[in-house]
Length: 134
Image 1 (tube, rainbow, N blue to C red):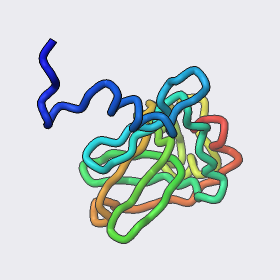
Image 2 (cartoon, rainbow, N blue to C red):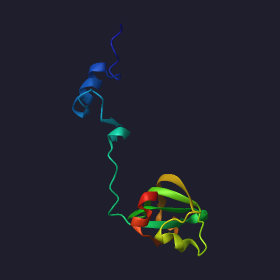
Image 3 (cartoon, rainbow, N blue to C red):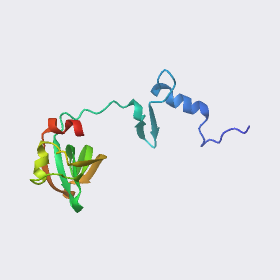
C-alpha cells in the first residue's frame, strides 16, 4: 500500500484531531472544516428563547412570519419561525398578536434571516399565547 501524500491526512491524524471532541462511544461531537466548527444535531439541546420577544414580522414581497425576534446590526433573525400562510382572522393581522385563531394556517420555517430594510413592520405578540405554536 502506498504511503499517503503529504497533503492527505492519515487515519491517525483524524483520530488525533477528534480525540478531545468525542463521547465515550467515540462519536465526534464537533468537526472543524476550514476553521468553522460544526456540532452534531443530536448533541444540541433546544435553545432557550424565553428572553426574546415574539413578534409577527411582515417582510417585503408579502411574507408574514411569527417567531422569536432578534436584531444584530442590520441583520434581523426570527427563530423557530412560522410562515403565516392564512391569517384566519376577522379583524386583520393584529388580531394574531394574542395568538393564532382556529382558522390560522402556520407553516414551519425554522430560522428566518433578513436585512433590517426587508422588514415592513413588526407586531409585538403575547409570548405565552404563541409558545405552544412555535
